[in-house]
Image 1 (cartoon, rainbow, N blue to C red):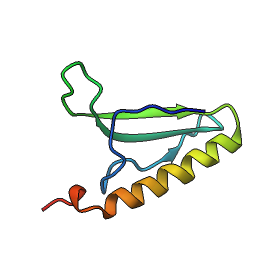
Image 2 (cartoon, rainbow, N blue to C red):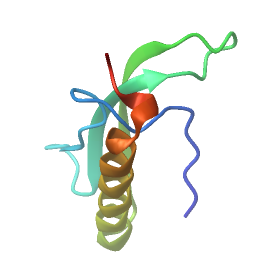
Image 3 (cartoon, helix red, strand yellow):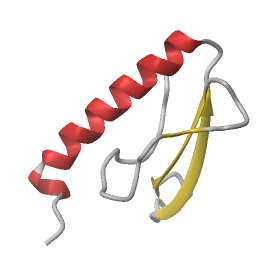
Image 4 (spheres, rainbow, N blue to C red):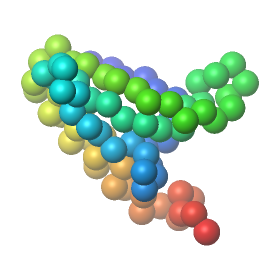
Length: 79
């Protein structure tokens, strides 16, 4: 599968995956979204659902690896 998103995976209170109670293979998370026509940053809550458990688990693994890596970068540090 391919996922396309226009947000950075980082932040202390952002991009924390929460399993959706109402759906077996779905997550919720909040992030700063840049997909508006003028690319203005907007805090949004997103949901993502997968057709199978393998993709569901793989997404979490890659998403959390990316968040850990990005949180360690100097460009994402808040002064």
